Image 1 (cartoon, rainbow, N blue to C red):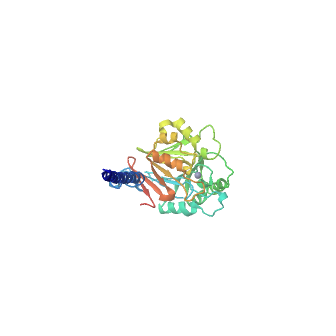
Image 2 (cartoon, protein in one colour; image 1 turned 180 degrees about the vertical axis):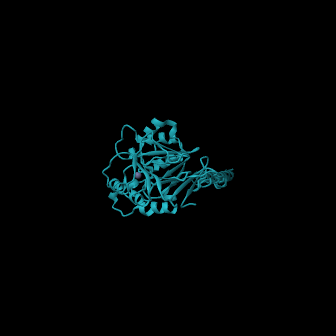
Image 3 (cartoon, protein in one colour; image 1 turned 120 degrees about the vertical axis):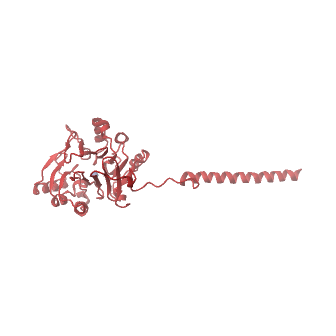
Length: 329
Ligand SMILES: [Zn+2]
């Protein structure tokens, strides 16, 4: 009996060992599934770098395209728009703020060569969104190189050196200028619609960023919103003033993905399918902020970044659009 009892308990111990081995194995399997994805289940396909609103073979524009390129100027913004009617619009040129004391001039080294490869002879419309160096520092090189139909600003006279340098060239090249504010639109090409959402018509916000010119561009069913460096205050103003009209398929994220921009309210109102962040690799500001990236990921929005993807080009026939990345063709 005693022996049997021992045998029984030995057998119980063996059974217990098997049971614990099973539990251990199962726990490890669940742990593995949780962190790495179950090997027995099909894995999620990696997010494509060439995002297709439609499969490439289904994108066969019958009309002239609208082509928007977010140019990789490092830490800054520069957006080139070729309208279906063949007009050329440039929003900002990037640049190195004077206090960085760097010789890097993305106007001369990036934007001018880019426009030359596009065989651009004239810029019909140029927008300097605000007076910060990472948006207009490169402007002189571009303004000296190409004839400009009209250059528009936010109307604030700045004492920043980049603003003064830009205006020296505006004067020497005798470039016509104008001011853009909320409610304005400009008719550079009748097939597309450009609307200005901010700065407000009757007042300015504190600081440069919130007074930047925000442009919405629509071609047929496809729309873009270019938010320059606006922060929560100007975002709220745009929502309050325009409501659902801010809704756009493609959102240029404000202020290089800074923590002070892209509120959940604004993101919900714009409700974009893709987001583009114009940002420099290893920038000292910590852009883009991880919280902004998390908001975009939570909302299932495809993210494109100039620091990783290089030039980002969106082509559309007004019904469908495709996104092409220079570094991940
Ligand atoms: Zn900026």
